[in-house]
Length: 153
Image 1 (cartoon, rainbow, N blue to C red):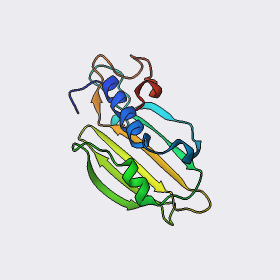
Image 2: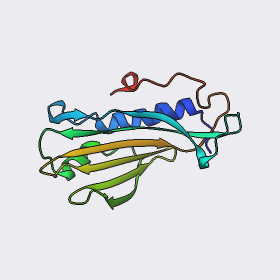
Image 3: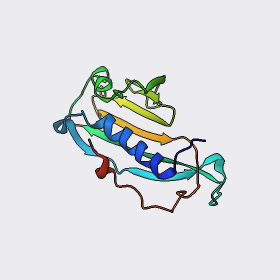
Image 4: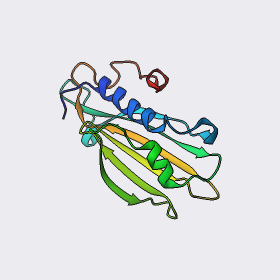
């Protein structure tokens, strides 16, 4: 549990994803999947009270216009601040050239999936999830869902 609010956790996840995709040139983007921008309850326990806990997650995938080396994509998408640490790298279940990268700043976990070298469907996925946050005054459904466009850049 952290000492922040779910609302702040939501904003941090959105900022992490927006930051990771901000340097991808617009002319490389063919299509963007629908965004996932919502909360979930921790430990599978639905407790809506102030002592319950929840996490926020935000993310989407992007189809690329053309093949881009995964290394180049990783350079564009890796979080720039020193607070972010690479915590693991794993082959993606899609196989081929797809690789998953996980970063954490202690409050948010950022997942970047790179499959830019796939000749039939070059693609990246990015998502972030906050740590479990005690509901307190801003638990699930106590604030409007943050608009990712408000935190672009």
